[in-house]
Image 1 (cartoon, rainbow, N blue to C red):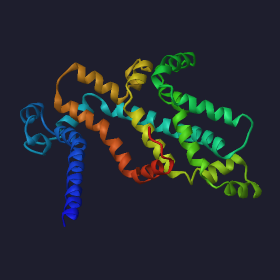
Image 2 (cartoon, rainbow, N blue to C red):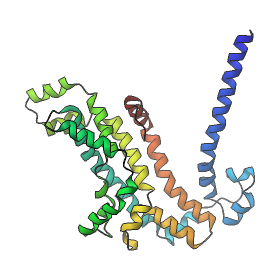
Image 3 (cartoon, helix red, strand yellow):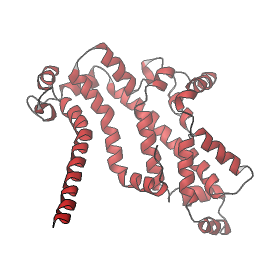
Image 4 (tube, one colour):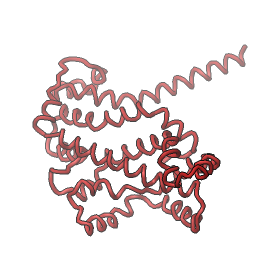
Length: 280
């Protein structure tokens, strides 16, 4: 009985600890979203109480009306969405084709190219910001929405992720398609890409989170309000004033799309991470 009691008590302690850790992750976004419906005065008064996490007191949409009507957040949201979605589309295509070639095709220099991709994995993205800026400047893309998309079409990490996925695909499937007269690009677009939903979901989520919340690169290539994105808007707004209700509303607009994307594709995301054993 004592042995069983120890096992059960150990399990209870484990689940209590996990529940406590879960709260540490869940409470900040709850506080953010709930506070976005409160006035700055109410937020200040409830900051050190349990009511800060509850829909308590006067709950209004005034903060959202202010940021969308006065601050033109809808335009910044549109810029962030276009740049992030465009980057995902191009990245899935280019990284996917590269991973498909390295994982399933045989050609001269393949091993050297794969080693180069693996070597580039250890280079932090911040180390090539200046080089990237020079290239974008030479292409006359400064203050252009394409400057937020084109530099991120190919990334070693995502190439390797696709490579890991395609390396585990049955080669017989490709050989059968070749015998039937399908070209290698046709095999990729018609067969392999539709079978790659888990890894596509993983790349899309990881890339969306990075691009959606990026501040450094947009700050380097943005010169006017025309292509200003949400993180830059929030940075400038936070520095200009201490209207906490509006700041939390803007933070919610910045956070909720990422949560929705993960909720929709969490099954494919977890499946892909489990299959490849890779994490960023």
